[in-house]
Amino acid sequence: MAEKLPKTVSFHTLGCKVNHYETEGIWRMFQEQGYERVDFDHDADVYVINTCTVTNTGDKKSRQTIRRAIRKNPDAVVCVTGCYAQTSPGEIMEIPGVDVVVGTQERKNIFSYIEEHEKTKEPVNGVSNIMKNRVFEEMDVPAFTDRTRASLKIQEGCNNFCTFCIIPWSRGLLRSRDPENVIEQANKLVEAGYKELVLTGIHTAGYGEDLKDYNFAMLLEELEQVEGLERIRISSIEASQITDEVIRVLDNSKKIVRHLHIPLQAGSDSVLTRMRRKYSTDFYRQKVKKIQKALPGLAITSDVIVGFPGETEEEFQETYDFIKEIGYSELHVFPFSKRTGTPAARMDNQVDDDVKDRRVHELITLSDQLAKEYASAYQDEVLEVIPEEHANELEDNHLIGYTDNYMKVQFEGSADLIGKIVKVKITESGYPMNKGVFVRVMDHATHVAEKHA
Image (cartoon, rainbow, N blue to C red; front, side, top):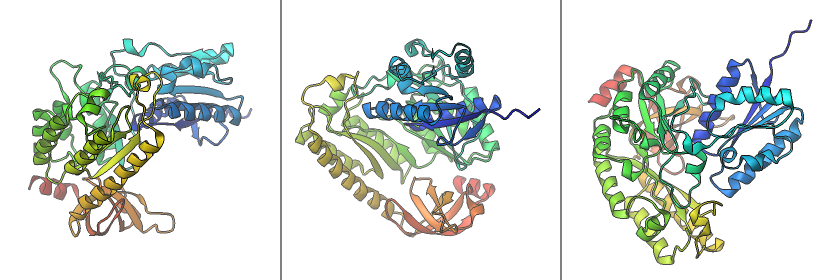
């Protein structure tokens, strides 16, 4: 009798780093069930589409991807998960060919839903009320397709309800992962060979706000003790979360890198109030000053939304001037996008698209200028880089990686350096790429000694 072939599964992920992390977690569950992973453009027995809903465009792209999978193999089981599935399961169930819908929780039930669908041949809606959930969903990800940096998801959800954002409705309220589980997974990832961990979540540094007698600063201190871990990167931290305790931990840490992503969204107090952000520009400025003292040479990256409803030329100018004053090393600039279901989508004085486009362009030009200025301070300096990949297929002797302060560097080096910490001298600073020359590999003992010096 012919041997039964393993079932195949294929994934497509839209949206943020958290979604990419969770796709790896879902793949791990399929792997344990004996599935084989194939590319999304191949025929598969099961397609899993991990959707995004942060903008109306995210919804649209999610629907297009779902239809693509159904066309590819009409006999396959099509499972839709993620944020769009959580907020609009009804809309997704109306697409002919969708078999299983699971939101942003209880993903472990995906197999019982697939079984149920295979028995009844009816679509299964496994989405429940996210606002009632108070428990972090554990999903182990012991290894990643990208071999050099590992993400470690430490929390889920957000309590902020900014007027432009749908995320609390798709991810629920803030819940933190049990500290013991965070440390256990950190150790597993280090054992798997990762030197750098990126702490990630929906509102990452809000970690611990729902825990008794435990907070983000304490978690950072515990991660500092993980043997063999060389770099800790915080994916994002709100100005309000930069407490004196967190600053003290950053000051004393030998592992937390000199790069923080501190979302701004607007540099005008009146716009921040309309956005329902919980800080003023002055509060933000003071926090940045304190944190720059603790981490000299700190690279600060940020998110900015332009063309928020009612944004005047004066308000935009305030944002422009504030960005210049802070001196970011890079900005992510977004034109305001009306997200159905949010208060900002219903606000009066929506800004014209051509005005938004001009403002986006002005801020991107400023961001490029600030990024070059930041990088130029490191001309002829020797920095630590973890090479991640070959520059391109033709130049396999050229590697690309990131310094601890998140500068992208290309230099000549052999493939066996990928994933190691190496010293590189910056010979030509620039943006988006710096050029450098390899100096030497850092072994663990030297790295520790230099950090403590």
